[in-house]
Image (tube, rainbow, N blue to C red; front, top):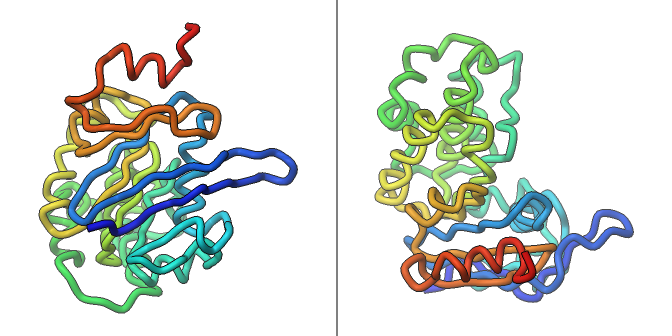
Length: 235
């Protein structure tokens, strides 16, 4: 059952075109990984889906309704939450206050609340009264994920959640993904680390220069296929 899709999605920053007719699909209870080198258009795709970048209404659909022209807060209220690249915590707020911000704008009950987020990331319960930015990079990433989960999203968009983190920390963060899925969220994970992406995804899309160059299930894609789609066949 298709939950979210983009259809012939194009995106611009001023005169610069960043996406060229991108088609992706996310089904209910699925994790889709988007891989590609820096500048491939992955973050632009996330911004387009989440409403940070406005697009043609029909180019993004959620639950079979066009949402491409809606604002970020409207899309969030429908049940699409984003963990942005760079975490974007509020420095003046505590960990707990940063988490609670995730509940604004979407009035729904579900699995996720302060208790279940603290169960998922116990270190955050210990640090709940600390300023959000006083934490390590990995703990800040946990706050950013927890904040998105607090809206009980149907779709969770994760933009480069392992960027700049130590391997042991990345492992901890990715350990949470099966639990997030089990609680009912479908996920799109943008990831530069190919092995990490393939390990969690049901399906993978590879992007290069604003276009989808490859898609399939992790076990159907050879290393060579991925390498060519990631870097171009001439490398």
